Amino acid sequence: MMALGWIVNLLQRGAASMGRIQKLFDAQPEIQSPPSPKPFPRTHSIEFRNLSFSYPGEERQVLRDITVAVEEGMTLGVVGLTGAGKTTLVRLIPRLYDPPPGTLLLGGTDVRELGLERLRGAIGMVPQDVFLFSATLRENIAFGRPEATDEEIWEAARLAGLAEEIASFPDGLDTLVGERGIALSGGQRQRVGIARALILDPPVLILDDALSSVDAKVEEEILGHLRGVLARRTAIVVAHRISAVREADWIIVLQDGRIVEQGDHGRLVAQGGLYARLNELQQALVS
Image 1 (cartoon, rainbow, N blue to C red):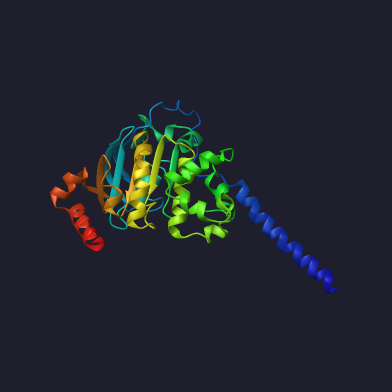
Image 2 (cartoon, rainbow, N blue to C red):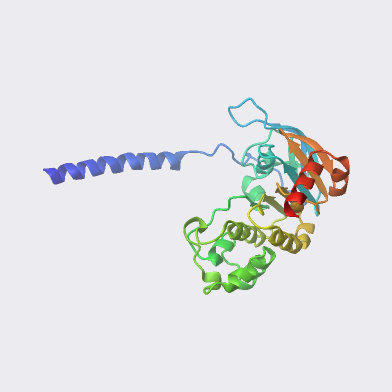
């Protein structure tokens, strides 16, 4: 009887778990492709047009009246203090959150009117906290392109400033990184994320504070490698460190969800505002 009771209990728990799993399978994503997507644009400029945004169910605007354009081949730097809205801004581009209609355009077309798969396939996005699988370095870098050759994987790793370190590992690209990349440092995980994005060769590249865990010397090396790569793409670099954006074609400074300053590095330093203060403080910490 005890064994029978145990089996019945196990079946009941299994049925309840299966019900929860089925609910997940049946759930429909809130953000979907439009019924009749517009033709995908041939150009990949990005334009924020008087964009204001609140998270679903909230009244407070986390972004207010954002207007800035990023042409093809141009790099936009985005800086600001924690909570200024930097990450929210770039997450709207692949529609991880939905921008208001007509406020965010790719190649002149509202992103909400484009097929979601095509839109996201055109964007390589590297977050600050990169998720790695319990697999080899090769599999993690080539996750989006499993057919990539070792030569392509090594080149992506070189551009991400990781090739020398991989070569120093006894198993090289076959090194297992452990659950969520526990065998790697924070900086190494971020660079795997950069290599993963680069191997996709996306026309739009977004680095969302993706160099925050590397030191200044490694950051400079990576940015040197990426300079030519970024020049062929529409690129957005989000950073806390001024050194990561000083070579950008245009820089915006966010504060409380608004653009409070914009220009190139020299102009912003000369203005003596928030950007200049951050630059001065960070230079003092390095020296």
